[in-house]
Length: 128
Image (cartoon, rainbow, N blue to C red; front, side):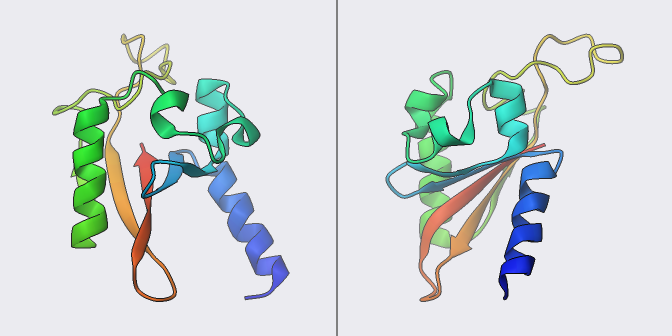
């Protein structure tokens, strides 16, 4: 992969209309995309290498820790939808006219990210 491909891949990740947070096994943020910047007012430079729970203190920490550990150990994705858990972290609604809620309802996917050695040392949390 050349530098031009890396550039447009990063541009895509930063522009997609979903939150993307990559964390390592120590719960340190490795990626914080533009969606997360826009809805939390926390910049990527503030979030990178910070502890996820300190960055988003309203997270259901025990629940999320269990899901992340399952993803790291099983190498399989985990899912939840807004009907089971309305949100992972409170973000302002992005549909103020059509949606009566103050907070954004969220579907969540947690994806294991394989290293070049086949280990899962990172997980991507996607917020839809």
